Image 1 (cartoon, rainbow, N blue to C red):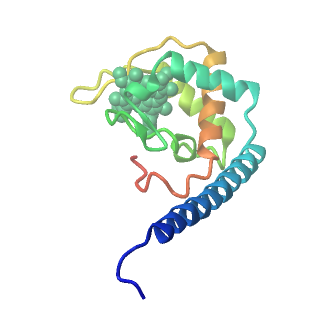
Image 2 (cartoon, protein in one colour):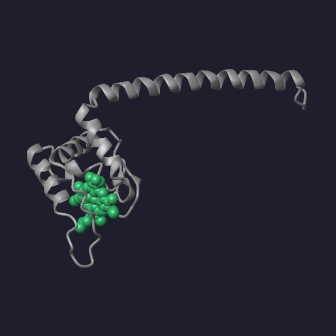
Image 3 (cartoon, rainbow, N blue to C red):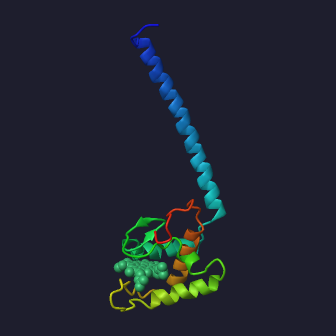
Length: 149
Ligand code: HEC
């Protein structure tokens, strides 16, 4: 066997490698699309969820909070807040608790980080609750690993 790499061998490695990884790329793309469609079908985005996301973006909640681990680390993770407020057992109770929390800010408690008052309407808070419920139902494969984000 020759010790040196011939031009033909280099070319074959190049074409073979390119073809191989192209096939891998296509397969992974197909897998991602199938998986994303299954996730979307299992947890559909209703008009209220979309409206809640709009409220979330309009008031830049992500400037202080994280959602599924992404965002700012000033305030608690909210991807799991629906579950932490007991939404799985008592959806109406969690909705009321979220509303009371948002309407009760800022708490004014000395030494505690403060959340501003956004003067949201009942409708906006309802939409936000639907958005946070929807978010809590996305399978993040246990991300973030800590409840606090
Ligand atoms: C300026 C920073 C800031 C912004 C912007 C902000 N928050 Fe907060 N938020 C906080 C802080 C700080 C806390 C924790 C306060 C405490 O524990 O006393 C908090 C707590 C919360 C909690 C309770 C979390 C828990 O674990 O009990 C909810 C729900 C919440 N925020 C929702 C929102 C929503 C929805 C928005 C956008 C409309 C928003 N926040 C925007 C600072 C912010």
